[in-house]
Amino acid sequence: MTTRKRQGKGAPSGETGQESLYLKSLSERHVQVAMKLRDGEIVTGWIEYFDDMMIRLTREGKPNLFVYKSQIRTITEHGGVGISNVGSHDEVTAR
Image (cartoon, rainbow, N blue to C red):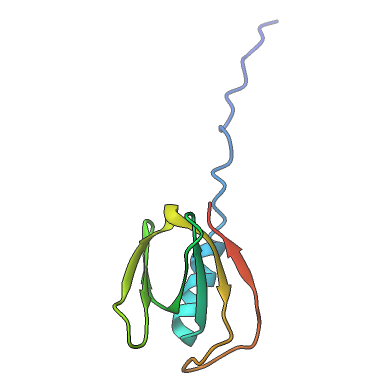
């Protein structure tokens, strides 16, 4: 009887796709968000664009920001003035 070593598939990736769906929802609804950065600074605006590495935060009366996801601690729905505002205060934590 020979024993075969099981070839594992490896550790799960940790990616569920939910981050992209949530960011897409925030972007499409133009929801105001508060983004807390790793250094403690909080910036507000709405998410105009995002990809695997960064988020473009559009701000009224201030320069737009391109923020690396690795520098984001949390994103919270701000409840400020947006084109289509949802009064929720959901929060997503960046990995």
